[in-house]
Length: 455
Image (cartoon, rainbow, N blue to C red; front, side, top):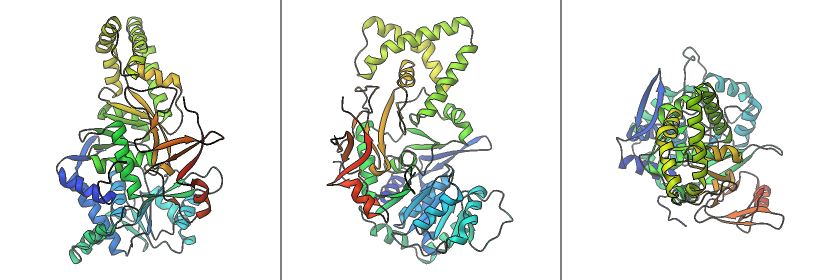
């Protein structure tokens, strides 16, 4: 198992910010221009959030709710919550007021961060039935300039509380950070309840740091990597990609403007790492398909020929083997003239590797991206395993599988074919639900509820 690098996620985060204070940590697009936030600024915002939370009396082990689209303030809030030893409780932006009520009540949140008007409305609708809820903090007060409510704090007012608290108690945050232990819970993630209400999975600082190390061992991260942040941050996959892994490895996270601009922002950013769900791969595939129908017949023919050569080359590339001489020549020719310009058009030309997860991707879609020169690796896992359990390794890709276990993870099959695994990624259990915890973790093995076979 990889060694524990730091005691906690915030400890890793502040250490990372101190190594490269001037390096770009986050980018967002405003009024058509990309703005950069450096690590020093990111760390400062997280500190202010932490001090403001202490000013409002947040204690270690308390749960704090958080809902919003992907934006820097979401990360500032998340890191600030974890820094005071509290548990960030993310909620999907698509949740109904009833679902919001269930989670805020079950987690007993006194504080709730909401993005803007739409999420605030849901909170206001259900707060009458949430006697424990004391403060609602709005991350983006756009359109709420004239809104006043004793329970609601706007982002800047909230940060000013933090400034005042820090001036009065300059060492308070360091004390809190020093008290966080690896086995303390960092995140409470509610999994969509297909059967009954959602359950809150407790992930510890150790779980997260261990999983980040294991992923790095399997895939490799560089501090000059760039990712695109667009999937829900309340889900463990995007949380790892946008918040937890970069806190340790220091790459740059780029936020899409909104869900309709994902493909445009992908082209502008040209990330080096991309995590996507099958729906995104299918959207990209159909975008190429539509474009190719409109080009002249000669270009279409050249594209088809290059993709056909790419398809023949894919099995060699998947196994990390050298291409035979003739095929290698044709592949390089087709790649230079046709496939590379195509990848550039899509924003995929800088990719070192891409991950597909969240649901099974069709073998056709997968083989298509390999044929145009994109290395797509499949990843499999679940919240209870801190995200990933297995992943393809470069040079050992079998498209019809979900790869091999992460370093330090053991996987075996139960008698009925159920996938069981154990490792440092196995969660602490379900919040306030010892029965469900005991049914899921038995003798250290997590029972996934999924069925699988080994090839």
